[in-house]
Length: 318
Image (cartoon, rainbow, N blue to C red; front, side, top):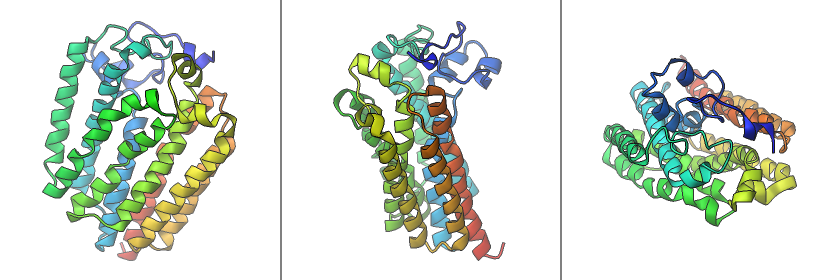
């Protein structure tokens, strides 16, 4: 078993959290287990949920001839991503508490370790969901209905690794809903551009979460759980090339559909280079490297968002 799976941790720490994270250093003792439960100690998941939302907001603003996307909407989606990612993680930990207690990397999480009771976790889940609802209600009714419809995906995702080798696909469907929702929040409707962006985001998620799943493949196999990492095995790299090629092509097409220009496509080329670096660097048996490459997708998201906004500002002479 790799060192990644057997990392020691103190009584208030979580083994698979980044070392010296802000929660372990600064959060009050009573709040720390709930911060861990919402994964506030590892913001990468929030970024991966947030980027498709912000991409979509920026493309919609570009389509309407604006420069910057609405800063109010940027802030709302930021808060929404934090609390809804926290909801998803809390729900996932409630569903998986028996499995988590049998894996070295996850048994120190708040529920299996006993630091948060099941009833307290359910109350925390409800509180986060109410905040998420308050955020969603700031948008138009079409966006509200569209956002609410994603809850079915959120509900079924934790069970997918029990029944299919493609839970990463369902995660992609769930995590990229913001590609549709951002556009709907701005325009009150949908368009081919966000639909294509949604497909591109699913392919992106299939890539980065397959990398992430390679950290857990030994434990997953022992527990009878499934993942694309186990399905692809030594053939992971060709699959990654395919997923990331679809992602870049789809993002480029969504940009073209909204009238983006050379500044965007120059940035997209840089984004493609970042994904190519991930594929070239990947060693599926090196857990630490897999985690590093997975986290680097925050940088890819930043590049794409900056490219859309920069192109719009350039076109508007700002």
